[in-house]
Length: 127
Image 1 (cartoon, rainbow, N blue to C red):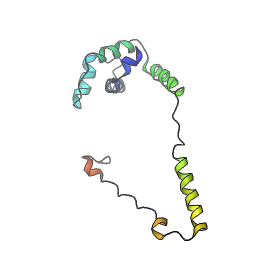
Image 2: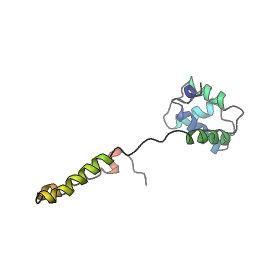
Image 3: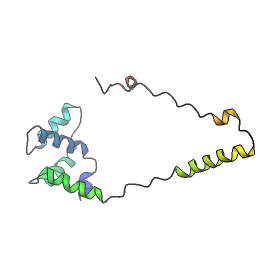
Image 4: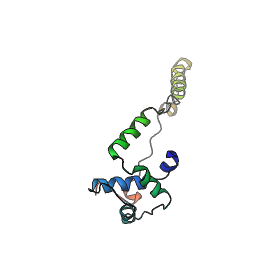
């Protein structure tokens, strides 16, 4: 049941936390709706009541600590997938001098594409 409540409710959680940071110890549905509407968001009338009922009577710091403890036991992914390519590339580069001089074009690394300007995204983080 907790997975169902958590799915897709991050905007509600964020609004709840903003209300708490603003001094409202027990935000209501209308408080959260006001926060969401101030930024153009909409309330999910099915998920918000479930979230509020699951948080009712609980200290948010304890809820966050319990969530952090659960996340500590989650696997964090693999890595190492790119290692085979790097080894193969290094092996190929090491074999090239033994077989003769490598062409200059093959030795030159491709130039990275220039990064897009922040202005193209419609906002600047530092203004």
